[in-house]
Amino acid sequence: MARIAVITGGSTPERHVALAGAAQVVDALRARGYAVAVVDTCSGVLSKNEEERLLGSSVGSAPPTPGELRELGKREMLTRLIEIDEVQNSDALFLVLHGRQGEGGEFQALLELAGLEFVGSGSLGSALAMDKDISKRLFRDAQIPTAEWVKWPADNAEISSLGYPLVVKPSKVGSTVGLTVVESPEEVERAVREALQFDDEVILERFTDGREFTVGILGEKALAVGEIIPRHTIFDYECKYTPGMAEEVFPARISEALTRRLQSLALQVHRVLKLRDFSRVDFRANQGGSPYCLEANTLPGLTSTSLLPQSAAAVGIDFGELCHRLCQLALDRKSLG
Image 1 (cartoon, helix red, strand yellow):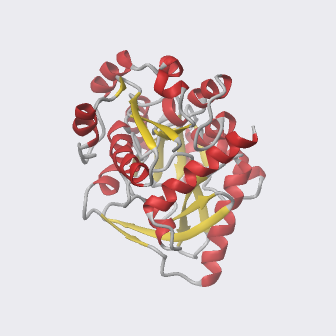
Image 2 (image 1 turned 120 degrees about the vertical axis):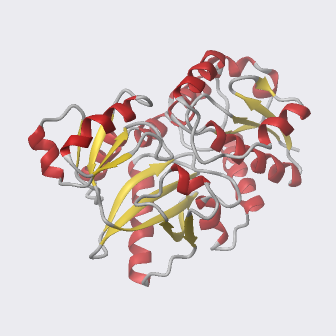
């Protein structure tokens, strides 16, 4: 029986998302016979009662406030996790973390230096994907279509070249936290201030008006294409985590040609960013049907109704099997090392 330590929680704006995913991953792995310990990066190994309290909470329609995140940050123990027996003695770590501290590459580098095997991308791929400015530069060099953008600070001419509306967002935060769609020049600085609450770098991106798609990657295979139809202009935090705020269609009702194009681009993104095991790649297609890559997620949401599990389910891989296959990828790597 393989020993798996599920690492979750964190002090990022996506903490609640991580805990919700961990609850279902833990249940799925235990049902498959794995011996599972749960470790919150802000409080350590969870007792049974702590598991029930923390993993039983809902995501909610809004992320934690900056004040709440500062308090959580004071308890953050990522650098000390490798000293915990349940972590050191595991056969593999299953990371259910979101946001810069947990999926931005620094924690992955620490695990690599400690010789601990884990599910998901390594430190380099994680860092490349988390930084939207750098990843978009790599997309452009690889001729993967992506919306034009500038990094803040930018002059008026650069910003005006993007047109309006445009998207203002933190460069290294996920789940659309701190993201604003602005309609005029007068709104830009306020949107930048909002984004800077969550990151020290901000990008401004041309808004692509059209349909939103996502593609899961498992191993070296693209899974089903899904379409997201949010009730808001974009698939924002509220639409992602509030029931009824978005329709998610798997497989997407699109042509075979567009399906193959999106799957091919998603796999190309996965490889260009040096990702491994799994990812989820998001796109918007303009009114003419041309897709533009928004970003790649190295640790995408992992509840049974999250987008990656839906992408897998549409090709016959249920949630328990998905979690099992991810563990096996890490365990196979350890056996070869």
